[in-house]
Image 1 (cartoon, rainbow, N blue to C red):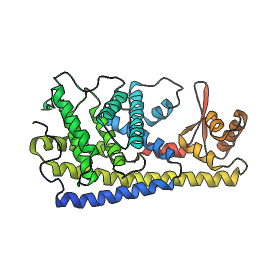
Image 2 (image 1 turned 60 degrees about the horizontal axis):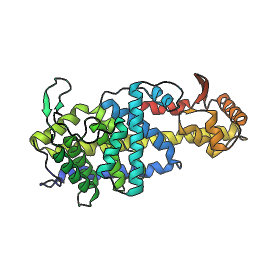
Image 3 (image 1 turned 90 degrees about the vertical axis):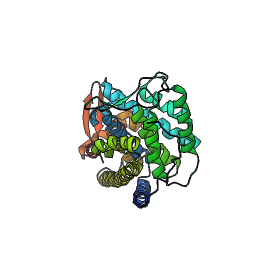
Length: 352
């Protein structure tokens, strides 16, 4: 099937789609508002970007554990290839976030840059033919994306225009169309799925539906992976765009609802820790101290030294006292001592 330029020739906003879009937008707006209950947004960004990096990579059968990921971020031990891949995803996503926040645009060159960070190479857009998409179980070729370099570039130029120019279609519906189009162009040798999922979140930010990158659909896609690939393919073979859009809208709605619960749980843990430290260790309590303990499940002396402007000796005493009242537990990793916020770690491990 030949990939056609956007916009679609038929109106994608059927009555069923519009009805679903209303509930999905409502859930997303509630998520965006709920995020503000945690004043330090970096706590959420750190927690949720890592979760998305893990889940999006898992869709491509790149598997790692939360503990491996958290430890990898501390630069204290060698990490597996899978963990490095997930770290690259996190780096690529945050780069995209910075680009959109600064420029208010998401251009073709930005997408190429994001994919380059993800794959740690500068291969760029496919120049050689031969790329096909196969059924992961049977090996059967199910789709042949555009092969000619010039064709791919023209389709990406069209997609760039569609992403950045205003139109009258609901942004969530547009996100589903953009995701389908990008995955079908399949412009890179590798990393197309993960790049496409990064584009999802960046587009929502571009359209002002989210202030920070905290909605990630990868957990929903993992739970409904067969439907994801089936529905993408049915748009190509049977032009069933409505079913695909409804799938993506359902993902936005359910993921928003689950992420709201996660944010509320983190907020509850933060407040419980505030109360406990203020009551039992009033001399060391500060809002900044609590935030440092929730910025990363693993805390070390340097985090307190840098964040609070105190000496290493004082920071060490703080962490020892915090362990005595059950806020953290110390662990030795190689030559370094870390203090785990167990409640935060366990909640993040549950996912959304």
